[in-house]
Image 1: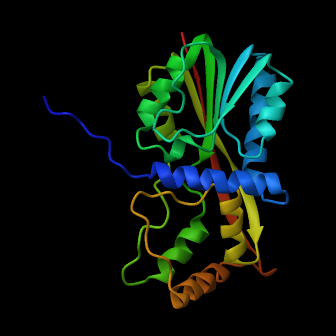
Image 2: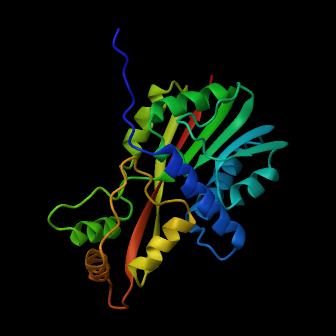
Length: 251
């Protein structure tokens, strides 16, 4: 029998280091938090719309703590965990009424396996809500990095999941019902360096298993120039963050 091996696209160690660095920045104060603030607000709105008041919640991700604070007013018990060093997002028995995963699922090597673990951790009738930065995001950053190394560009941004693929993944994981949708955040930047700083603050930089070498000083300047070329008449570049949200119910 031939064992199928999951491709190791992401590094668990780099993922953990990225998370701890962002967590420290958030606790220090003044760090960018707009992606996770938006995810927390979206989670609140969806729970209120569905009139869901869970008894027990498992929360993965959320370096800002904003989702945890929101859930604390809606649930009797909230267990907040850091992203796992392994591909399973939740190795727990089926006791949670709600599992929320924010900004973590897109950087596991075995996404179907992680979703199966999430489903297994839910109680019957429980709901999983998964949000992450999806395909179509950061187009100006992607173009700038390609311009930095025009001859042999290195892989500096990881693959992203779109809404359609997310829906198929939820079906594959065995959720009884599933909804996949998304929305767009638009953020304006005066310089590439500020965008990179915001990504670091929110644990959104790449965690590829085979990290590329640092850009040379010349290549970095080419990237800055290419990013600036996309500026509007006010000298600002509009970058898009496409937030994908997957919602699934367990029988």
